Image (cartoon, rainbow, N blue to C red; front, side, top):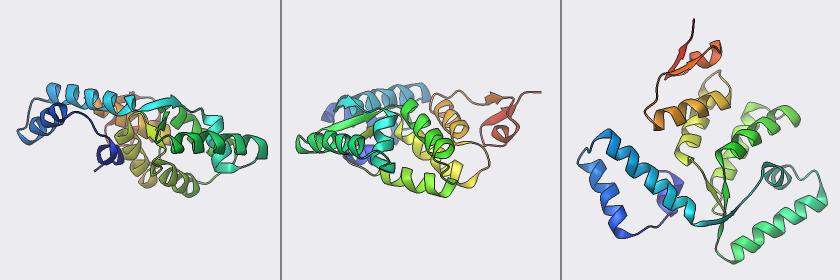
Length: 178
């Protein structure tokens, strides 16, 4: 079960609809609508969002003043039992910055994301898609971004993911344009 499903609370009525829809095998269109509604409720619990540069400071600690400022921000949210929202675009940029600017290896990027994703202080947009993309990235040869695009497309029942990228086309759910 995804971390967001374990932590997020929402009204009993919505939860019953969510559970009933999947136990009774509701239509795919209805399941997707309920999933999207569930994610909107989960995101609503966050009160602010965080940029890639602030996450990088927290993770890399390469600028002491900015690192301390980012830590203070996080501490303030923890003290109020609130979370910071991390958008999908921030996740993509974070992976790119760690890999290309800081030259982190794939294994190191995956380890960092395992830590970040388990943080109770952060709430992620499309968390299930991120988790799927990370699992596929760990095993595959395509870029993380490609796996993330495919995971999002799958969530919206929009496969195959059409691409000219030969490496990305080897991923399950992708198709090479020729």
